[in-house]
Amino acid sequence: MPPTLYEWAGGAPAFRRLIDAFYDRVERDDLLGPLFPGGVSEAHRAHVTAWWCEVFGGPPLYTEQLGGYERMLAHHRRLRLVPEQRFRFATLMSRAADDAGLPDDPEFRAAFVGYVEWGTRLALANSQEGAAVVEHAPVPRWGWGVAPPYQPS
Ligand code: HEM
Image 1 (cartoon, rainbow, N blue to C red):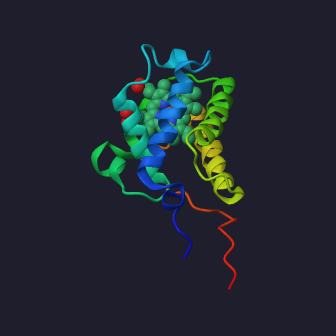
Image 2: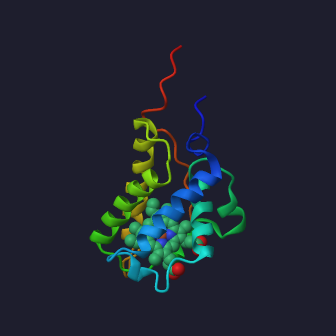
Image 3: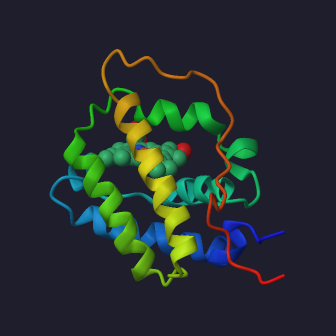
């Protein structure tokens, strides 16, 4: 069995470094900074870290303690994001993975950007006025996809 992406990345401390590096960039960003007037709070950073840990195979804290998928959805509804903001979000996530020293092997990064692409496209769609959203769902669990680490038999 391959390790989870959460384990491979370095667990909760690695995801906290990622999220801090990301929002530090967001705060200075012309397209994304205005979404967080006054800066990105400690509570927001902690909650989003819990989300990412759970998605990548860590403990289900966001589901059990923070309101799960429905809370995440509620935060994105009617933000009216535009495609340029989604693309910037995805770009800054890739840069933040470097800032935070996440593993840079092709397998991990392919899985990582796969989730970022998927999640940001959903967020963009769900944020539109009158969007037909999925009201209830589990927090997703992401995996290695078609490229787990090669392990010679
Ligand atoms: C992989 C994609 C994404 C993930 C995993 C994600 C995750 C989250 C989560 C978990 C929350 C709720 C935090 C809480 O529980 O307090 C949240 C809120 C928020 N997200 Fe995202 N998000 C994504 C994409 C985006 C994009 C593309 C944007 C903007 C371009 C965005 C902007 C925001 C904003 C502004 C909030 C706070 C809204 C408020 O406080 O009312 N998100 N996000």
